[in-house]
Image 1: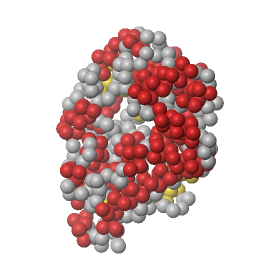
Image 2: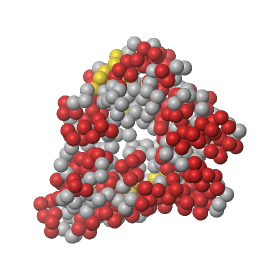
Image 3: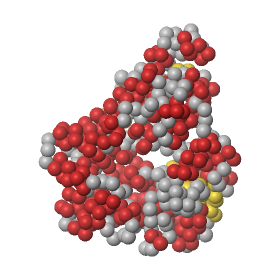
Image 4: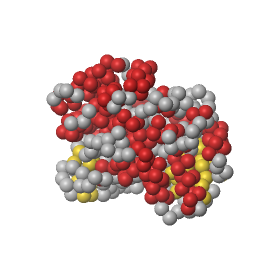
Length: 479
């Protein structure tokens, strides 16, 4: 038997645990790929299983440092030794859904998220997605007699705009007189969110997330709604030139190509996508990854990881790309359809910060299935003045005319606020280093704040797991 204090005596391969894999399985029904609640099975079998605070896998935790996890908020490999996540293969986007049903479909999703609760909070950022969710939720609350409040994480974006000011203006524009709560930018006022058995958290500002949940609950809210998922499901993808041309929407096509060029999407890629449509499915799929994601196919994995787990993380990432390519090739997806799939799937769990229930109606399975099958060309419109609103016209159309003069006409980014938050709240990953997950010189190898945030999240998860009696695979058990 070994103890956590004897980690250095444990062979690194045993401590790392088995190599995690990524694979899609056939969906048992049409909504299964869209269910965010995680399902598990025993590794290498079809037998269902549940997480338990037994042995965790360092090799699995290393997958949190791959680009799918760092860039898409994906809970990658199951952190528990002997378990893997069940991933149901996504369908090909068919384009048969009717855009005119969008508002009613979203309102139905909001109603399912609320259930029989009478007091609803909406997290509002001053951005387009949360504004649309607020407008739809407000309409439902008026119709059903429910109470509504909004809560805003008031972190300035990179252009200095404060969300609370924008949201106050939005409330006036929508004619809403509901309570509006503000979470300030002092993260040390709030504790870390609750520990989650499914793995490290992906909150951009986890303590402020908890602050939103606590303020909402203290004001009487029974559920907190988020606008997550709208980008993935409703924004126009790339590689749409052929679709727009085939539809005869030449005004939209001209604006789309101009936007693509201005946003760093070379027209050559659009031409490559058109030509790839006439190639064999396997060849087209093989060309897609290095063309659509050139940097990500060259990245060898995070430099923060130790040699013992680095290759396992890289192999998992290769599995992810190979499985994604297989699904796209077997379904005969165009590059635009593949891009929609790869930015949306695998669907993943929405983790509350406290005991207050939280939900993202855009991630509602029935709504998400409908949204995925909306026509690709219907996701873009040249009718708006800004590139951001043109790419997200389906979301923009959920709001009253004139919304472009109320909300920022760009995608809000808060990289400076993000960096400041993690300077103030960074957790030293001492346990992750001691267990052999991260290198002792991890800090000098950090490429960006995302890796700092991930190192902190993984460390907090490890501490919480071990406080609950868990141990690394190969540590604390008979070798």
